[in-house]
Amino acid sequence: MGSKGENNRQRIIDAADQLFYTRGYNQTSFRDISDSTGIPRGNFYYYFKTKDDILSAVIDSRTQLYNDMLAKCEQTATDPCGRLLAFVDTLGSFEDQLIAVGCPIGTLSSELAKDEPHLQAKSREIFELLRSWLAKNFEIAGNAQPMATAMDMLARMQGVSVVACAFKDKTYLNRGLGEVRNWVKKLTLN
Amino acid sequence: MGSKGENNRQRIIDAADQLFYTRGYNQTSFRDISDSTGIPRGNFYYYFKTKDDILSAVIDSRTQLYNDMLAKCEQTATDPCGRLLAFVDTLGSFEDQLIAVGCPIGTLSSELAKDEPHLQAKSREIFELLRSWLAKNFEIAGNAQPMATAMDMLARMQGVSVVACAFKDKTYLNRGLGEVRNWVKKLTLN
DNA sequence: GTCTATAGCCGGATAGAC
DNA sequence: GTCTATCCGGCTATAGAC
Image: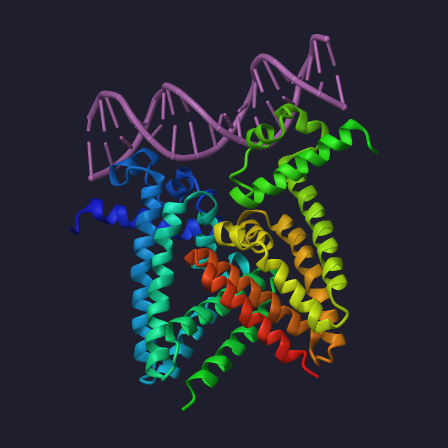
């Protein structure tokens, strides 16, 4: 705790997180992480057993990050509609990265589906965290099928991300997110 | 034409197509394609200059494939609503693969966005082919913004694919596609 | 056109000094 | 805890016999 070792461990996780997002997990090498942190390659094995273990730690770190993000969305508004809209706004605030390399959660899941089923299952926990939070807010708003509606909202946002990235179309990204906002408002009207 | 060489070339493309889809482009090696076809690794360079060239040929092959698929959708019905629904049904007919590894077009685009921008741009041509066809049908149905609506439809289908694959949820996949069908029907009602 | 052999590099992982 | 050196294997790509 607070030792230099824990500090280095977190620096590795943070650098790996960014590289896994922008280049993909399989395309990121220990050399890349070493170059980014200044920590020698061989040293990684003091903190992690394998590359998969680094990814596992990155997923844990992201889970914590998104948990904090949801807490911020709750502070933004007191009504479920305002909180759900804050969630959409958060995604929109990363528009440049979304256009360049897609959604961090969706693209990680899609990549892991092809060759790391165990870690794809772990990455699913992030989606489940978001889904639960969305469902909770839809339920408060009086929605009859909060879980199904939360799933639909995740799908809409993922769809907008994939297509905006595929077409490199920022105009579409903002229009698509605007339609999600309208859909949320319509569903949470009293 | 019709020579043994052309036959082998197509066999390489077909095997690579399947492997790039199920394992991802970066995770597929020449050895994998060699094992799948029985054609020795070194021989690939008689037909293609680089691995990227194989991917380029695979994208061309998929473009042709989806072009044929759209033609079949047109034969299924004479009205735009029926044709658009046939398009959704085609996606649904691959449910097992969608759950396992996602949409062939969406996941390829997402992977290439991270480290092959030139080929991501080429893969975009497949999305543009689909979008044009969808827009044409929405236009016939009297839609005021056919291109934007086509983009929305692509996004909805991509979103359902990503989320169904992430959650490994076939029930959601079919419900999500059902909602896309309802949305199409509502938009193409006269 | 087809095949074998291999170059040259880079990947993850390990050993062991300090 | 930190770092260097290195192993071993897989990768794309090439050379050249047949």
